[in-house]
Image (cartoon, rainbow, N blue to C red):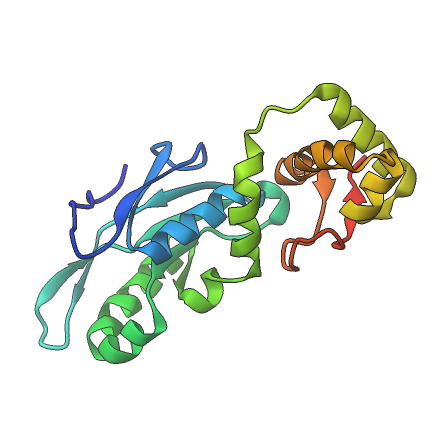
Length: 216
C-alpha cells in the first residue's frame, strides 16, 4: 500500500494510470513525468510490479531536523532479467539542479535505505523517461486492447514465421496485393507488436520500415 495519497492539485497534472502491474491496479501520479514513467512501466515486459509512494524514510536535513521523505516508486522486475528492485525518485533535471542542496540529504537516506533492503536507488529524469521507447509505447497502447480477428492474426504470424525478419510494409505486401486489405490488416500487426507476439526494437522509431521479427 502506498505510503501517502496524492491530493488533488490544480497547478500540477494529477490522475492515475490503469495497470495490472500496479500494486493498486491504478498508479496515481503527480505530474506529467510520473505519468509517462508509469505508462512505460506498464508496457515494459521486464517489469513485474511497481508501487507508487511505497515507503516513508526518515532523515535529518542540513540543520539536523528530522524529516520524512517518500520516494516516488518501487519497481520490481521479472525473475528472468535477474535485476534488483529499483526505488526511484522522478524529477526534472532543472528542479534537481535548482534544489540539489535540499534534496541531497533525503537522497542519501534513500540510498542507504535501498541498500539495506537489497534494492537500488535511482533518480529518473526526462532524459531517462522521455525517450523513443516512450513515444513507441504511447503509439502502441491504442492497439494493445483492440479487437482483432483471430484469422488475421494467424495469417500475419504464419507469414512472419516464413519470412523470419521483415518490415510492416513488406509483410503486408506479402499478405495481399490489395491496398485496402493491407490497411485493414495493419492495426492487427501493431496489436501483435503491442502484445509481444511480434518482436521489434522499441528503442528505434516504429514505422512501416522498422524491422519485425518472429517470436515463434
